[in-house]
Amino acid sequence: MPTDNEIAALEATLRQQGVHTLLAQFVDMHGTPKGKWVPLHQLGTLVRDGAGFAGPSIWGTALPRTGPRSEYYARADLSTLAALPWMPGVARVACDGFVAGEPFDNCPRQVLRRATERLAQRGWTLQVGIEPEFFLLKKVDGQWRPFDDGDRLDKPSYDLKSLPRQGRFLVDLRAALEAAGMKVQQTDHEDAHGQYEINFENAEAVTSADNVTLFKLAAHTLAEREGALFSMMPKPFANQPGSGLHFHVSLWAGDRCVFSNADGRPGLSPLAHQFIAGVLAHSAALTALAAPTVNSYKRLVVGESLSGTTWAPAYVAHGPNNRTAVVRTLNGRFEWRLPDASANPYLALAGLIEAGLDGVDRVLDPGPACTDDLFALDLAQIRARGIPLLPQSLAEAIAALRADEVVRGALGESLATEFDRLKRIEWTEYARHVSAWELERYGALF
Image (cartoon, rainbow, N blue to C red; front, side):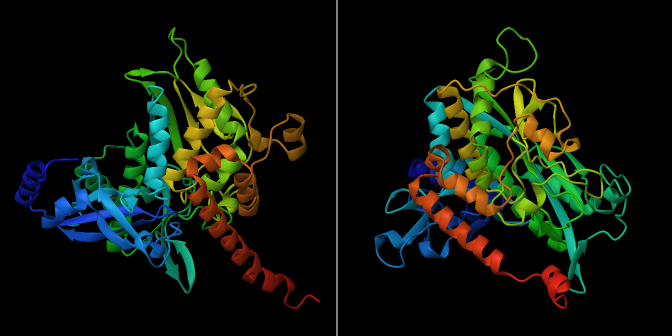
């Protein structure tokens, strides 16, 4: 906790930089940024006590409407403080949730902190590079369409005709993020019409999740200025690929990557294979966190799309540079390709850590590496190889999470119970919804 003098000095520095307002920001269970604008002169209160919120108004808290535990406090983590160039005079600070003076179990950032503390007890830190994919959309005659009418190639990946048409938004986004302290590595047009990807430098797990949240804040605001809707819906168009949120994962002991072989050989260490084995073993339950919406399961199927592939792994396997497997292995790291753009990165990372540590503790074997193009095999061939299928609906994923003590343990019993309750409601509402497809197919059939 900083001293009063340190807080006063920081406040003076921020005021000299033109900052007059703090955006006290946290995320709810869904990973959606929430918060308040707080005058700069309240910096000390924001650090010591936090900004107060009605707990039941936040998804996933399960807090009561009355009594001392009805209030949720978001306490500032000053290491995240950064001025927002798209909001002159405003600085964002990521906050941790507290209730009744104690760290709040259901706060997603606190959930991830608990998982990273388990790593720290072993002398490890997790470095993660998260790659958000997203769409720029607009609504025409009640239908969602890609924002760029000229974006029509059969294979639009890396298209250098449509990319410049969104250049102002994409360049402004990169500049805004870098001015706020992030380092952007690259930006490209992805596999679907109106779809883009931006990559950041690797960072420690909590910082990386904070960066995804900052990216969302910037992208929403800057897209609105262009008249576009920024969307991280996993699968807005049935015949095109969906949006992933791939995690590039490595484990470190100080400045030594323990996922690399000690003798310098390429590939992955035995410890890395054990960690991956844990991730594979718990993939069904992890799917609930990595693909947490009804729409997610329109992405997690194997089949043809407009560009020729979905790039979404439906099969539980690992393989060297194999983008058709749920785990793509590389030198000293692996890419977890399961998460989609709707995943809460704090919860997905917490689940990943606990699953990986379970693999290490039980010295699990991930099985043989898969070099096949799994998208080219039919289901009978997949089964013949003994490769499990990921859950194919939110209902299946939630059932798997309910039965998995390790991944539930990552969330904590309170949040796991609330996550299960809310997602079962979501599935029931979807199952009861009568779609346009049903009306067209059955309306006059019988």
